[in-house]
Amino acid sequence: MNQLRTWFLAPARLLTFGFFLAPLAIVVLYSFLTRGTYGGQGAPFTLENYTRLADPLYLEILVKSFWIAILSTAICLVMGFPLALFIARSGPQWRGTWINLVMLPFWTNFLVRTYAWMFLLRDTGLINTAFQGLGLISQPLPLLYNDGAVILGLVYGYLPFMVLPIFSTLERQDPFLLEAAADLGATPWQTLWRVTVPMAKPGILAGSVLVFIPCLGAYLTPDLMGGGKSIMIGNVVQQQFTSSRDWPFGAALSLVLTALVMVLLWFIMRRGGKELI
Amino acid sequence: MNHVLEVRAVSKSFGANHAVRDVSLNVERGELFALLGPSGCGKTTVLRMIAGFETPDRGDVLLDGKQIAQLKPYERNVSTVFQNYALFPHLTARQNIEFGLRHKGNAIGDLAARTQKVLELVQMLGKEERFPARLSGGEKQRIALARSLAIEPDLLLLDEPLSALDPKLRKRVRGELKDLQRRVGITFIIVTHDQEEAMAMADRVALMNKGILEQMGTPEAIYLRPKTRFVASFLGSVNWRGEYGVRPEVVRISPTAPRNGARSHRAQIHSSLFLGNCFHVEARLEDGTALTAEIPRQDQTYLPGENVHVWWHPDDEIHLPAAS
Image 1 (tube, helix red, strand yellow):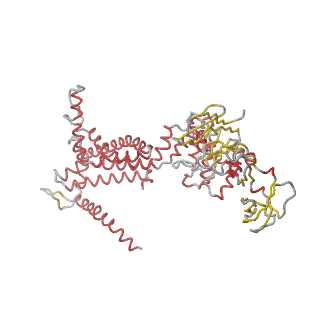
Image 2: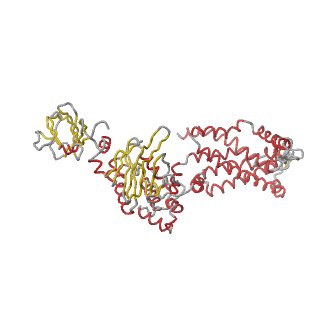
């Protein structure tokens, strides 16, 4: 029995070790190395990669990244909850259709979809051309290459990750509870706030975590839709590994980001995410 | 006029299904009223129209003489104890009770005192801080009852209140519910498919079948003077014999023909089962028809194949035409 267990768990253990712990160990190791003159890294061991993080420039980018991630998550929640509620309350024959529509964007590559947004939003894009053609505006609207465009891209990309977990908690809610609330004098609006939303808390938490974490580390969306002007921490990490050729600093940066996310998650779970585990 | 509730000729269809057809009934203040019938007879739909979860297609619902058929559930002073209790799982027992008090019970004053009072009433003091997941079925029901009673409704509706309880508990809760109803003096309407439950608890019973109200009256009245064969058969077994029927408990068996003006037939015992409180006897009459009798165990015992006389008083016959 015990031996069987060992064998069944072996692939999972191998995966965890080979694809998670071992690379992480390499990242940790690199973060304490010194950058070579022409790229590469080597001795001596140093803490400099971490002390460099105190530079106000990086702190500012980190704070901004948090802001963008928080804002994007909040917008996803405000948009995603009503959508999830609508899907959960629609008839069983329609539910599958709506869910498939929510998932539909996943069938296309994220990069292609981001470029599609850029074609819509740029100065000579569909929206600006149309508005100018109609004579509504004389100068193109600055729709692309700013914080707003990044947030739009992130919300667009991660909205399904908010909708699906909330939908799954709402779908399991006993419809009699809504009748019971009405029976006890609650209007539909009061029922929403005092029954539906509190009971969907596990889904709301799960969705928020699923949206917030990738938003915080995003680099493709800020790179393309922010156009270098709206830079996030993910872009800084990426630059260290590409143009700056400073792998040790890139490793230190990504580790700090990971640590921050873990502390945040731990805090959320302790504060009321018992349902998440 | 002392009717707390009047239902006047209500009808309700769901698509092609005529769930309730032209049902009228009235409920008196302070009584325990039972809506009885087989599953799918429309009794639950009637209850849901009284609660406000459904709107009748036609007809009126009057609470204290005021038209309420079009009002939302949160606009009428009626409360329901749901079959599955529908306690809010994210709230404690106390918070469940306070939920209604915050919305409907605004005229009732001190929240904590009121909650305490109903907890005491249903004997759940000490368990008020528990979440529903940590309550047994019977305890959930008490909290659901307390939650509804707390808002002091004009009418308390109970949908199959005993069906989710285990059979041993059922008889006890039956008595407790009736006792509770007498103490609080609130009018109860109970929906049930169990005729024994309805007869044991209710002051008056309305028996429904296929969306139609068959008969309304005290348990004794409808049992002893059923208006249709459906009513007679639903409330107990009947040996139908052409134009009339006799209930098994009025049939008597003796070795010789009785000389007391009773209706008597020669018969042969087919089977005899001892049920503890009585014997359940199947007899075959000379004309070939079968007859069931329930005879007290003090009577002589009979063996299969034995030739006997079966008899009953003509007063005990239920005369109803077959085509009803």
